Image (tube, rainbow, N blue to C red):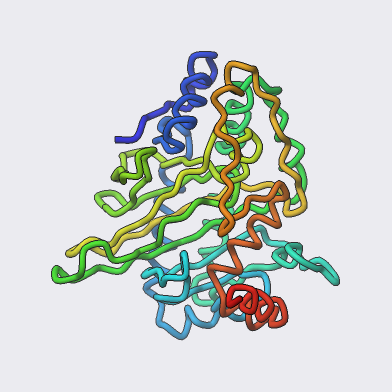
Length: 334
């Protein structure tokens, strides 16, 4: 079972030490007492269910393939992790902004969302939810910094202007009893941002977290809690003292349809994440930033998430950025 942390606990040195130690060892925990209004959570869940219940043509009217900013709807089988198909449908929603004129590289991720005309209430519910979770995430981040011996506000400037948060509304369809155990809902991966707040469907199953020995820990929903995990940018910021943990979702035989709503808290696309100078007692335990040629980690958030977005949605990458997609394919084939 994952550890449980009460948000108000973090007002004390002991609570901040607990947050630091738990995420050094596991990288995941349940956050309770977060203060996000249950009515708002219910409204977001209802809007997500209403979206996935729309006729196919309404959902496809905002298909991600239409967006050079990687926003919008992906049908079942439309996303990849580690080159394998994820069996879920989803809509990706980021900050509502104008595209950067003549943008290059990762700044092309900035732009407008696509909203379904058939469900106008989705926009207001998601926008309000984003505002509520941003406050919780910033409070967590400030307490992480304090627990690591740094100024609690060391990360604030990276989020002060144009943070590039992302919300996904995800539907995992029901599976027949005869389904093969271990089918990929979403493959094992790390999150490219700073931290994630995940809202799970009550009574659901399938989320698993990788333990240090390589085994997998089940992470079922907990009433009134978000599942929180460290992203790659916090691993970079702490020299690997905090390490982003791989996680996956399985769709076990007989699993019911369920929703999952992750909120990815991330700084501005062009923000370079500050590096914390750890006290020697902690620095001696830092494992260093993981060196994986297949998954390099970058100090600039936009570069880190561009890597992930273009891999997860190769069709969007190929349509809007064909030369870059072709070059990547050529390199991977050598």
